[in-house]
Every structure is written in C-alpha cells, then in structure tokens.
Image (tube, rainbow, N blue to C red):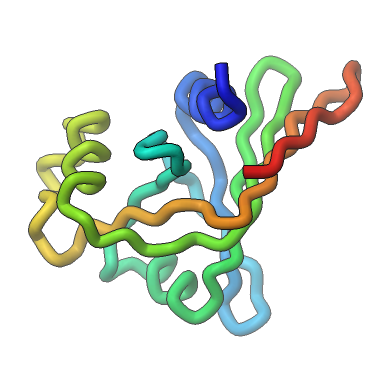
Length: 133
C-alpha cells in the first residue's frame, strides 16, 4: 500500500475530516467527507460558490484533520484547483449522493489536490508516522 493509499483509506474509514483554511488571518474549520486518490494525487471536493473556495483562492494553504480509533491524521499542503471533467466525474462517481447537488460540468463543482503535501499519523501510544507527498 502506498502512502497516499494509506491516507485515503484512513479518511474513507473515518468518514469525516475537518478542513482548516484562512480568512484574512482568522482560521476557519469545517467538516468534509470527500476524498479521492486520482492519478497519484490526493483530492477533495467542494463548491465554487462556498466560502471555503473563496478562502482557498486567496490562500491555498490548508490542513485537514481526522480522528478514528485513537489515531489522528493531519494532512497539510497547498490545495490546487483541477478543472478536468475526468477527475470531477471520478469524485462524483465515488460519492453518488452528491449528484443531486453537483455535476461534473455545472461550473460549481470544484476538486482540489494537495501539492507539497505532508501527512502525520499520530496517537498517544505510538511514535508519529510522517509522510511527504
């Protein structure tokens, strides 16, 4: 299993992670649930009309955090927009429940991948495991 596969597997099992962004120096955190490994990149999904999209446009540095069964995962990096229909379609195919709100060609669906990513798995009982991708 690759490092990215391990990250995606953890996030899939956790179901919810929290994404932190910046809004003019004020941290903003909200729950997310979409994650996709596509062409060797770790993707998340949102809508271009949402505040989080506007925050990432101003400052693309972000961090997510998930917790499950005594272990937490933090992933940080720069989120880069990818407007390809193929990756949007792949994301919506993985999360068909979103198709009532989004479509790959609606002009609103946004998928972003982590660039210069760093992940840390940690717990109170084991040394941290760091990954760079």
